[in-house]
Image (cartoon, rainbow, N blue to C red; front, side):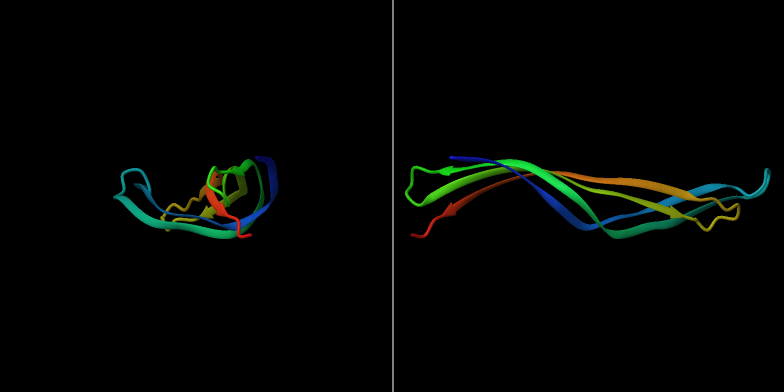
Length: 111
């Protein structure tokens, strides 16, 4: 059996997509309004990953198993959006991208 630690560079495209609805009145006593608009932004981020795993032989000749768990972070993404509303304004979103990954596998060794 082999137990190990692993780590390294991670990169990938991250994104935020959705819709937002803004409602209100332009001035007190005026006609109310409601506007729905789309929010979206994506980019490639770099980050890091760290994990641990084990690999060992099965009772069947030539076969091994492996189990690995990883923690990955790809930083964050900030998005500023100005919805098309009469009074103006701005919507700011801040999203962090983290993931936990568990992998299992079987290997066959050709000799």
